Each structure stands twice: as C-alpha cells, then as structure tokens.
Length: 162
Ligand SMILES: [Zn+2]
Image (tube, rainbow, N blue to C red; front, side, top):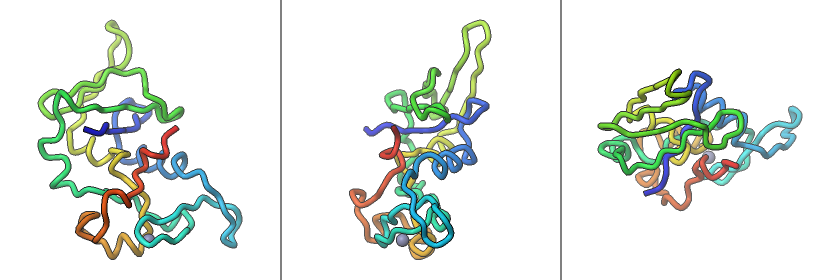
C-alpha cells in the first residue's frame, strides 16, 4: 500500500492550515507572468489549462468515504515531514486503533500527539492535488473517478516532494 505523507505543524501535530500553507508555498515551483508580475502557476489535471496558483483549490482525489474508513492500521506507512525541509521529521509515528501517535523529543521530555485517522486522511499529500476552481466546482462532491477521470490522471502533491 502506498505511503501517506503528512506535514508536521510547528506544534508537531497535523493541521489543515499547515498542509495548505506548505502546498501553496513549497509544492508549486513554477512561475510565469500572467500580466500581474511573476507568480506561481501549475497545470490543472482536470482541464489541462496552465493557470495562476491563486485560482486553484486543494482537491481530495479519492473521496473520504471510500478512502479512509478502515484504512489506517499497524501496517500503514505514514511519513511525517518537517515543514521546513519537507524531509522526514525526526519523530516516531505509530498507528494504534486507527489513531496516529506522533512522538518527538527524548524519553525524558517526550512530546506526544494523537491525531485522528480522518485528520491524517484529510492532510495526506498523496491524496491531495491542485484543481482549478472551475473544475472543482464542476466536480462538486463527486470523487475523481465519478467525475470521469482515472487515478493515473491525478497529480498528487506528494509527487512534488523533494
Ligand atoms: Zn481545471
């Protein structure tokens, strides 16, 4: 099974705010001048247009209902990334009963965060992609394949990791 990639927030846990900030500032490294100065842009996997990043949403490729339920177990590979380097952080990640335990620090001064499985799912960079607002509006609540696409056409953000 493919690994899950999450970015650790400054506090050492997983939050949508950190995930979205990291995606928008570090996982799109192409720039073009569309008439308002140089700005980040990417190609929409839905319509194929190259557009400024500001008109993209973060889209969940696979729908929640069929992705995360019963998905996290002791065999799940979860890579917790340092928000600055985007390399694996110096933490211990374990899955216990569907809850993810993220430990940092020493045995004398341990920091432990318990993260619910749905939060891990929501923030998984392997299941998130940039999708332009018009495609995202058209896709609505459908999942990527219901919208007529194959998973091979998706552009997961995890592919942009260093
Ligand atoms: Zn589009």
